[in-house]
Amino acid sequence: MRLIQFSKNSQRGVARIENGKAIVVPGAASVIDIAQAALVGNIKNLANNVTGRGDGEALDYAALLADGSVLTPIDHPDPAHCLVTGTGLTHLGSADTRDKMHQKVAGDIETLTDSMKMFKMGLEGGKPKDKNPGVQPEWFYKGDGSSVVKPGGALDLPAFALDGGEEPEVAGIYLIAPDGQPWRLGYAIGNEYSDHVMERQNYLYLAHSKLRACAIGPELLVGDLPESVEGESRIWRDGSLLWKKAFVSGERNMSHTLSNLEFHHFKYRQFRRPGDLHIHFFGTATLSVGDGIQTQPGDVFEIESPTFGAALRNPLGAKANDDFLLGGVGTL
Image 1 (cartoon, rainbow, N blue to C red):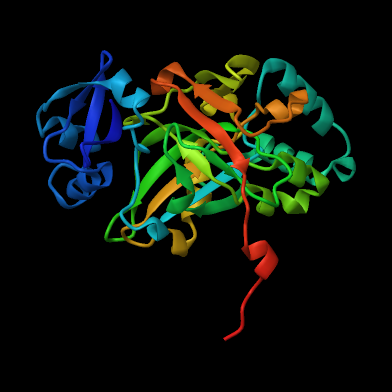
Image 2: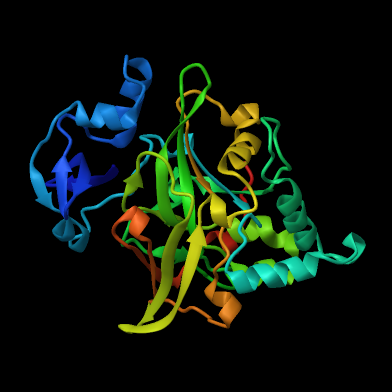
């Protein structure tokens, strides 16, 4: 099952996607409302709670996308209670990339960079054979719900940015129950947009490079993630295709299990606050900057995977003017 959120005639709604149609879910203004009802009800299953509400009006899905009516597939009424985070160095990439990475980590560990050490640790301990947790991954924070841009919305380019580059990734979506138990609602394809030029200046700038906008959707996949997810990442400039590259995700193409990544996120008590929503990116191995692409305002990022339905498209916004950079912090 794949779900969207939309706004039509100033009214929000939820719909499931079937054969190019958006079948409205009666009595639902948001996915989080359905999920919260499932947590306190007798049916702790998001898909069953959706189907149990019956079928409403059938809308033209393509038209909703075209006129900008489709929202992010999940959001929180209070953006401060939505945390956006992620993990890196988790993907094996293409066969060619994988061979090169294995060659790099085959030598003396003392000669490896910190990134290669982390990747090697994931290869050796990211998929534990028993129920014990495996090695912990690289982890980063992106922002709260206000940093999530809807499909079609512009990804802001901060005034201080050195780059604005795409990262095609799968994101897990989670809601924390009243008793503090995390529940996975599903998955979405996303653009974990980052500043790769800043990061390459010094790996310790990774945290700064991730504090950017991002986008997910347009659809929420409810149910299990396939072992292998395949897709293509593209950049369009002035209506012409500038760059494209296939990407893969899913556990078959990763050095960590999803359960291991989830454990090392939710082991922290502050991430199990009842009522909070979590959007957690699982990492990527495909970046246009690696092929020498320098993006510019007006470029359109397009990330598509058949697993997730419609493509996610977002333009790169103009470089922002930020008065704070001139004025600084005031004193009371």
